[in-house]
Amino acid sequence: MNYAALSIKELKKNLKRKNFTVESVVRNCIEKIKESKLNAFITVCENEAIKKAKEADKKIKEGIDLPLLGIPFSAKDMYLTKGIRTTAASKVLYNYIPQYSATVIEKLEKAGAIIVGKTNCDAWAHGSSGENSDFGPTENPFQKGYVPGGSSSGSAVSVSTNMSFFSLGTDTGGSIRLPASFCGVVGLKPTYGRVSRYGIISMASSLDSIGHFTKYVEESAYILSITAGNDPKDATTPNIKVDDYLSYLKKGVKNIKIGIPKEYFSKGLDKKIKEKIEKKIKQLESRGAEIKEISLPNTEYGTACYYIIQPAEVSSNLARYDGIRYGKDRKSFGDEAKRRIMLGSHVLSSGYYDAYYKKAMQVRTLIKKDFDEAFKKVDVIIAPVSPTLPWKIGERTQDPLAMYLSDIYTVNVNLAGIPGLSVPIGLVKDLPVGLQILGPHFSESLLFQVGKAIEETNL
Amino acid sequence: MKIHIKHVAKLANLLLSNEEEKKFEKQLSNIITYVEKLNSVNVTNIKITSQITGLENVTREDRIEPSIPQKKALSNAKSKYKGFFKVKRIL
Image 1 (cartoon, rainbow over the protein chains, first blue to last red):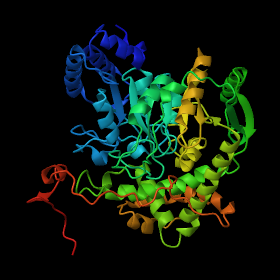
Image 2 (image 1 turned 45 degrees about the horizontal axis):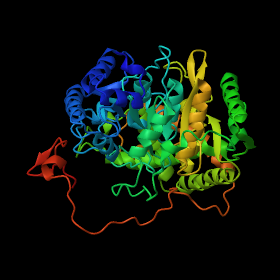
Image 3 (image 1 turned 30 degrees about the horizontal axis):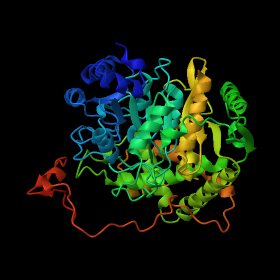
Image 4 (image 1 turned 120 degrees about the vertical axis):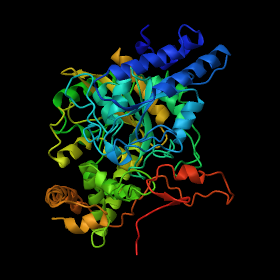
């Protein structure tokens, strides 16, 4: 039985009707994971998953229904999972066994979902390609030897290849949206604070967004309806009502104002990617959307601003890894981690704080203002995710700065804290291309609405 | 601008070899030069943004709630003594 092609909704229906068992689906996922040479997983939870699958089959027999009962998922190895090794893809936490689970993990398991493994990523989520993992790079399933994007590399691949039906990732500067676009799947970066960060290894506390990968937009909305919400254990989650996301999916794009930021479509963008996106925009226009050119004037300062603020916060968050309460000592940090910790220490140090960190925080205000102003004129913004197609493994690792510049279209979203949904729009030279839909804070419903319309034009 | 690698490594509590010092000094100085792009931005009268939620002083009731038991809290430590984390002598 080819479970792989099924959506979460179809899988649930089939399981409820007992057309096949949860155990058979889970075993199928585990088999795929073990046979794969893409290096998408660090830890496979075979015994735990099969045990939970058997329990799920029992529940189904008893007529119990839960939103995600029996659905296999995976999580980026930044999510603490009680009793299951969690490494942040770093040698420092090679043998760390968490004593508790992240809030999001608890929520999903309470809804009946079954974790099949912890996915590979750039160590400490530091990277845009998956190449900074201490456990080896993950490969793009579309073309051997190419990067799947990062830092949530394994998560994107696990959904793209049906090793799991959805996967949890984190997006601090594009780390969900970029691999989603490189692997042909849907990737959601919710509004900062929409989903709890509790129990997820911190990278940059004012930028980290907790999101997920799915094959379809509807599934992305479904998962968010379970993970979103205020958490008393995370003081940065406001008490804002969780929308009925699914109810927006059939609304279409009639009269929706879509902003096209001119700074994102200038000469740095690959011509073929630009063509594909422009074609999509025309299709939306023919379905009733109003297209408006807008300007986000401080766009060009985003990367510089981000690579001051993020390393500063990283240097603070990684100070706890001293080998005393857990993990190995600081000698086990990889090069990229060391670079970011030192960069951060430098920009926060006496004599440099004002010129770098304070200045960056002021530029951050300007970048956020650009979006606030734009959303007075349009409902959503459409933009590319990556200026280029996925590159070959090893091509950019010599120059750290070259790697940082891959984030040019994604970082401003994190600085402003707004949500972004990356949806696949086809292939260029046999490699996937995506575009991102951006909206004001807490406008995820609108992103799903527009995303679903785009998905329908793909058919 | 050139970064003072020995000073920064000390602040960051990272022990670097001579080779690493040279390598990182070059790489970090390059990155710092790039981020100095912000020098050309006019930020007169612009307030800082340290986080975008606007939330302040989020508190809870001062009530004892369950927490991780001592044994569990020590479960990943490489060095323990009678319920304590054991560390190298500081003084």
